[in-house]
Length: 341
Image (cartoon, rainbow, N blue to C red; front, top):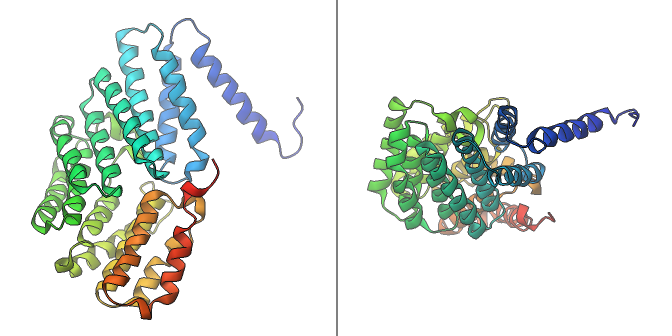
């Protein structure tokens, strides 16, 4: 097949995929090269997940999981079995996040439970902790706040053994669930615990994958802002944390940049400004979010924008914010889950 002008990249991609499948599945037994290739595949997906639309990644995610499960059905050495279970756990965790982003919490929890089974086979505390964080996130955005706290607390012991950044993610995840439940004391205590946990973090094998598999300072600021936005008595702190979170996500070339968390930080800044009756400031804060294309309107972003709508109503500012309300309603009418897949 001769390349036509402009088609070279497509041919290279197709050839690379054929070589990949041959490397992974052609041999009688799983080779070290096959395991290395799969780790590269999983890491590529983990790095891309926070920064690219889900529609670009979902096919590769499903195929990678299928390949890993097929290899695990073969006889493997104990070491290879642990490595493959580790990668299958991460991939299933990514598919749990994908299901959540498509507003399907049932499928998300199913994938998460499968991932936990694989993490147990790999005997990896860092994975167990990370997956409890994912479950806490799914429960939080589904409005099951007490369940979100429970999952975050279930992962704490595993995170303590692993020492990775999940030891920060879990308490700050609990913080925003406590805040949603109206428990400001527990929420503020959990935020402080997350900040203190940074002093003891030692990145583990999950963190080494990067992207969505690690937690970072910008996400800490965003989660804290998200918690504080629930608490009327913490209006000044909410402004401070959400302003810092927005600034932390301003550089799209930063490896820590994530479009979903950036949108959440902007929504939290809008909510904190509404609490000060600053509608113009809220419009300015939310404008970049409302410009997101439907492929980026994942479940968490849609819920964050809906919280801005609710904040306007609670503040009694509907009459002063008709245009903002109209833009929010137009945005939420076309979420990612409404697109054909």
